[in-house]
Image (cartoon, rainbow, N blue to C red; front, side, top):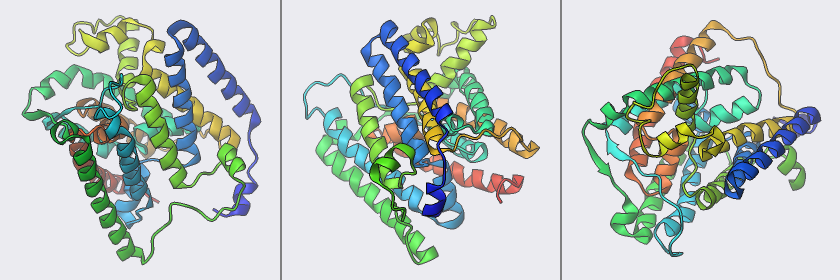
Length: 394
């Protein structure tokens, strides 16, 4: 898009002002009822939503562009995000700064994660967005993605019923390179692997196009204007998401996650309709049981998800891009429903989506994150082919 086209966009201050008011109200209510830390997680979520929308940052479209056309800028930005966040996380999780009230996102290396990530990979291509992508596009006014989100929630809830069986299948348990090697050698190994993957993507992109698409752009706009109204270059998105993930680790006590909240919302809804899920293994003890028994505003993941939606809506208003469209073709409805169910169910089996499973796992030094990347990308290849078969590609 040209600089002229970008500068001609008019902000929708009505949407921006209404959203800002909603953010203030939610933050104040959460702060009064649940304390400063919970209120801060709302604002971190808002920052994530603004960053995601202004940078148009995601995994689903980036992977699809690479699979179909070998356009690698998005995938390279994903690898840079993993590398930068690892540099920030490994010393903290490895104890360099002494005791810090933060825990890594670890999961078992086993069938559950492999199958779940594969299903998620297929689903995010059919649904048109990953975990973070679904939230920020809903905030941007995308009605189709709202439908995807509804079935994302349904799939996540169903996954909580079946998860104990999946966890009974073969696996190697939770494996952490930080615990095994120490944070220094583990970080060096991780960066070496990420650099090798970056070089491979770069080589394939150069081979297909003879040049690399830069992570910057050619828009010559004042920094302060771009910061508020967008658009942001991809490297801004990388830096912003890494910094906000670090803030999440320090404030919430764990890396950024998304999809636990979806299962919780589904459980609360069916509970309100009279179904008793407290006897299900997943909801019968530990944090899930406490979250189900408490207000949804007591759950950090829910608060951050609400913040992401509101942050994206604020950014869309400021960018003049909030424009809900209600016309949906049958094949798009089918893809949204199927994709949402697969993403929700897959994320529950895989201990998170592309954020809570892949990103949080890898930057925590957990090997399940790398298994997620391998099988999730394989699923995305299948999902791209399914999109073509359904006629979703133009």
